[in-house]
Image (cartoon, rainbow, N blue to C red; front, side, top):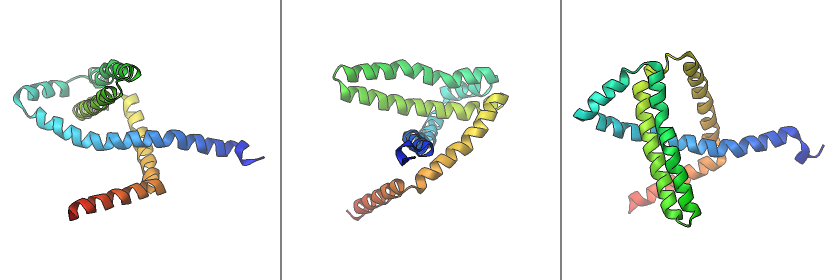
Length: 167
């Protein structure tokens, strides 16, 4: 059978096609998760936010789940509006809205997960999926970080940083 008709080669190609974009999204989330969560934690130390965070921490499991899902649902119309703007010829505006929504959504979801994690982990199905997701994500990122394109990109970034430091 020619290689183009080999089912395992086709599966490998399809896997690579969806894993790279997913891995890049996860890498962005990983970067944003810690950085943006720390920013919101700093805001959470302010008096009004302290009480709000304490309330969030006391939520029962399904209340925590609803609150945890809220930013994703709330930002969907914003992202659709941004795509509409792109379709109307306002590409820069649409892209800026999508990036702002992604950054804001990641920050909020990261902080909410930190606050609601104990309650969420009381849901057996959530804990089971979380415990499957974490090793799967780690393995995917390990494959990406071991790949030649990733290593090349890291070397280029290191060269650019070194050049900036020399200046």
